Image (tube, rainbow, N blue to C red):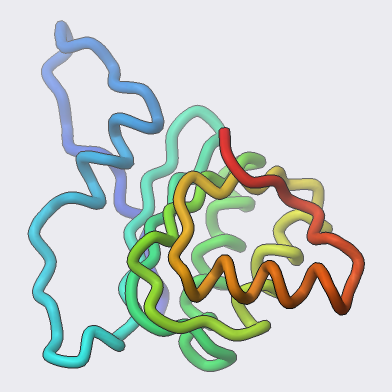
Length: 140
């Protein structure tokens, strides 16, 4: 099953076009059904002006990163070269998430980490001690 890239809601022609950050914030703060364990991976995405804003929540490992990899591939195919990631709601992640983000950067894309969770900060910190630094940067 393909993970669709959700586009921002239709706006009236006279309405101002929101920035990528505003569109992403509105998309990611929509009500989401939470699970009791909060471990199911959830991905929200908005593509606008060559920027793919992605929000992650839940747990991300080799298997649960597969939809994210497909989403990033589809975003790149649609012209996205900039990835803005909000991972504040990630409760667990392993090197599969790091490899997924690094793969985006290796193909010429730029990764910006807007927000991170404790799990992702621990992963990045550990990876920095063992491997060369990732090809992406933290912050806008």
